[in-house]
Amino acid sequence: MTAAPRSRAARVSTAYLLTCAAIGVAATALLAPAWVASTTLFLTVPFATVAIAGLWVLPAVIALRLLQRPGAGLLVGLISGLVLAPFFTIGSVATMLYWSFFPELPFLATLYRRWNTWLHYAGAAIIGATYPVFAAQSFDLWSMTAPVLIGFVALCIASCVGATWLGILIGDRLRAAGVATLARRRTPA
Image 1 (cartoon, rainbow, N blue to C red):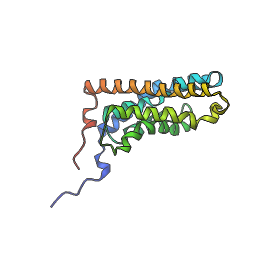
Image 2: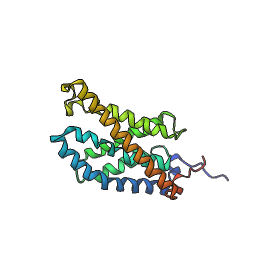
Image 3: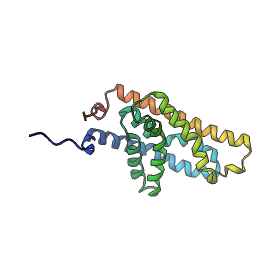
Image 4: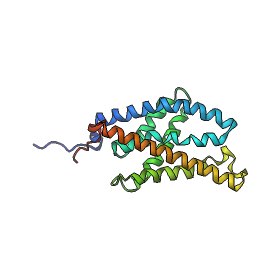
């Protein structure tokens, strides 16, 4: 008698889920004050909110760099959003999933076969360039002069790239310390 093959859901280990939960919950300690600061600054200095926009990609980048597993960034984003929701709104879940999707996107494009460092930066550049377009109405971008608009987009890209660099650094340090070794281990098919 042979054992039944494992389902796809059985391949997700408890160590992986707990590691994603730990990153997601820890990220809220950074994101909750950043959310308050961003909301406050948006009313007076919109450029300042874009300068700290990269903080929202940090949890996903850490998870993807540390675990190198498909969906790790999105799972961490979901957990962060759920933890933030009682303090802000349920919209924080969608916000965190949005900011977690773009760091995941370059790896998805390679079908999670490559985990090169430059792919992290590609995701940062994509979200840094597209977020101002998606939020154009909120920031009233179309009323800005061309140099101010270019500066706005450049600041957003720089913020996302800087946060990605920090996420890579944190992920590498955690990996070197032996954190999440079991969560990275892939089970055979």
